[in-house]
Length: 521
Image 1: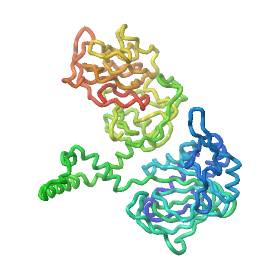
Image 2: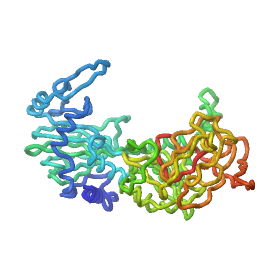
Image 3: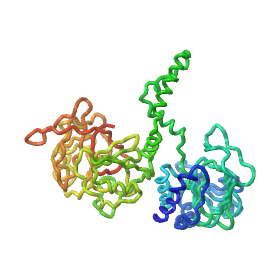
């Protein structure tokens, strides 16, 4: 099915982006022929029977009017006073027999195949996508003539549907707008009949009316969340909060001269911020902060077994990758990783949407560039699967408790005296002060959560001795009261170079490829 999804998405590139996108409709005949079996009637029956589909997520429409939910939903109250609704099959069948069509919102959150389609579109258009399912049995129009506040890509899965397209009466209308579009008069600009396997694109604001031609019909409508100039200016205002002018009170009760001076200074600073690259920066920020579809990696909550059958997949389709000859930077889901260049091929596969078997990840040498941090433009999380380990598994046990000279427990405040090197054989020989005991995952280290503010170390960690069976020792930063100091690691006391300080990624992230530890939130 992946090949069919990629083939369908490729139709939405090239001339389409330069021509029709955002301007006019476009119809592709049999461009999605491989998606006919993506979602079936059995899938719909299973979702309706097994999931809580309270209104308005599941809705029925008949001739432009919404059917009251009590006609097909049964409401009950649990012993915990929770109100629940379940579909009553007899009422559902009765309404459908009377001409109603069924709408199920956000199917991409319920069906893995539809989720794959939505993620492929997100990766292509760099925006959030929601896929709604429409099922019809009659030629009655479910909604009548209407418009949507987002661009849509339609996949006809079964049967046929007639789309009457009237064009837009207001350019790029919004749901919350200062003026409502005027309903069009006269015949449609185009009439398109979608057969199973066809695709259709309809721009935002285009009026349309849809009905099945004959027999039953099943189609997916994927809505593309718009990013407008209004969103850009709101984002830009947040970027300008370093400016004293923007933080200052507006001189509402001041005189005309002061008001004029304030407005001129504000205009100057905003104009300077609207430089030629501001759109690219805004788009990168949207991609980096997109949360994706987070998923746990149960039953593995700590150590990940060294199983080559386990794979890694990103939970966001909008990850971005960049780097230099010295390091590679991955930004995704609100976080940022700076990793060794040896993992770049594996990261490129992940960013493209391809799951990466953990056994294909190379061994990353210890490097001060291997680190992670939260960022306004950046996070990675296992999508129901374990993350890869960097290097071969270590045969030594996890570090012992502080009484034997290693990592203190989570509830122990850390001081310079409490910091000690990790266990030999899997952590190197250098001192390893940190903020929380790391979790050993093969030869990759992860820290489950940051420590309290008082638990910062006051020393820096020298790099571990290179070994094919050693994880890079976690690093730490100074407490903020002065430059990092050296820690004796043997007979001689050789100072280590200061480590770069960066904020720690929150606990929502999972295992990372030998990231740097330490720093402050």
